[in-house]
Length: 366
Ligand SMILES: *Cc1c(COP(=O)(O)O)cnc(C)c1O
Image (cartoon, rainbow, N blue to C red; front, side, top):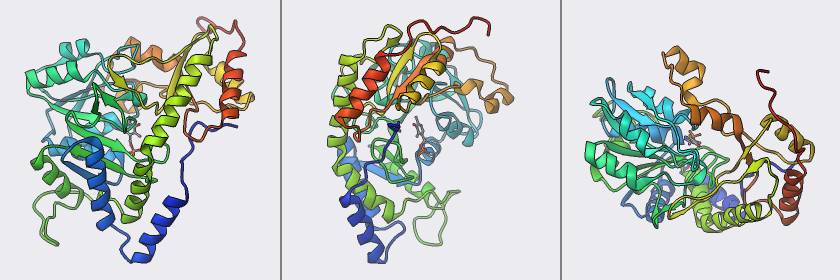
């Protein structure tokens, strides 16, 4: 089976981790500082703060902007759960706004209509590696005085009008094993704001600047030097990885011709980094996924249940009906697009897709 994700770990990563193991400093230390500097430079920002996960990055970014009880944060329901639970963890409430069905990202027109006096921040997701509409969202944030927190977990290396994702506000990245670069578990927060960076460093380390002196309520959300060494080796390969993902995506876009499949496109002056190559499937999507699995092609659904319909949010009283997100959840299917695909893998994937049964349709009312 061709896997949907495949971490690219080579001799460089092995050597880097071994060197840290032998150095005697394995928790947060010089490798973390070095990784932060390299990451900030890559994103074109002044500061980067390494943390233990993408979820911790979102949680701390919101806290650093002073988001808490009584506040609302506007975000998309068509994302990984952590986008919204990070808001809940601060005591604030997510306000879900439907997506632009073409880019799968927040629709700025609907965002504008959802802003209330309680709104304190916008939290767009650059879903699948396609940047959100940052001109329109940035203009709204500036006009209403809202914090801009970008969920760039899937979008390391992506650009909007030539500018890196994560550099428009406070950027939150995940370095989880399946992401475009990985430290196993891990996250990174990017910002140009010195005060935010300072608060982030305090929050990730028990509110402490000087050992055993605690200024505020913080967490242990630190990254280890072991992870940072991995991250540095991965970051050095990011451009090669991204080029491979984009080449795989271009191949699929050129070769997939089946009438039941609609292919992802890019909208605006963006560089899409194809964390996922996501099709929409007409008819019975789940049967199509089973057919592809039988042909040796692993696929995945990001995401089968929009966040507002998750049990957690139902029980919190969310009754939203967000038809475009709900439709996307029924139709999307992601293909393997990672840098580990061989030429034969790509041919096998396209052959399987183009041989899908034609007439499979969802039984109405089933
Ligand atoms: C992966 C991901 C996260 C969470 O990152 P973790 O490192 O797994 O905590 C948040 N948002 C999105 C969109 C993600 O894809």
